[in-house]
Structure formats: C-alpha cells, structure tokens
Image 1 (cartoon, helix red, strand yellow):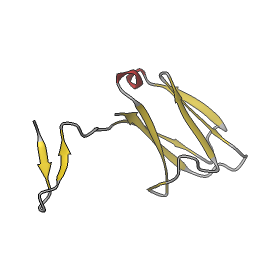
Image 2 (tube, one colour):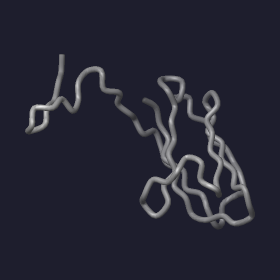
Image 3 (cartoon, helix red, strand yellow):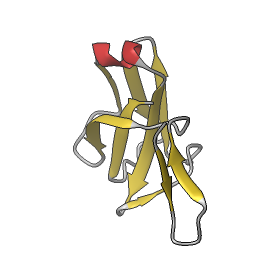
Image 4 (spheres, one colour):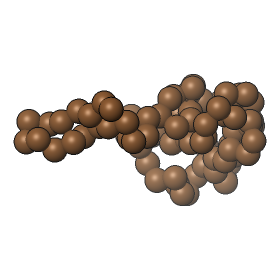
Length: 94
C-alpha cells in the first residue's frame, strides 16, 4: 500500500485517494459560438468531470453565464445570454 504523509504525520494521499486525469481544455467566449459540443471517447474510462475557470480561478459549477454538461462521451456547453465572457473549461475523468 502506498501512503504519503505530511510533516505532522497526517496521511495526505493513499491508495484510496481518487486521482483526476485532465483530458483537455475548451476555451469559449467572445468570438465563439453560442453553444457547442465535443466528443471524447476517453470519458468512458472513468467518471467524467469538468470545471470552469475564469481569469485563472475556478468558479462555481452553477455560474450564471455558462451551462456545461457531460452525457456519455459528449461535453456540451451553451451561454445563457448573448453576452459571452471568456471562460476556460477543463475536463477529464477520475
């Protein structure tokens, strides 16, 4: 069994710790389409996830401007309004 401890002796990683694999990045915003989708067969290799970044920081998954979802091997996104601020969407599996 692999276990990693911090200097105080607390276990911070062990073989039961879930690990994420980032598969890609989608950049949307001004100049991009109002909605779209991409397919990635690797979503079937684990539990898919996504996170939205704005200005380099992660923001709420329920952000007011952008809807993102993953169904099967397809990641879909759409803006709720004509305003399309710049977002980066990281996606992967865990």
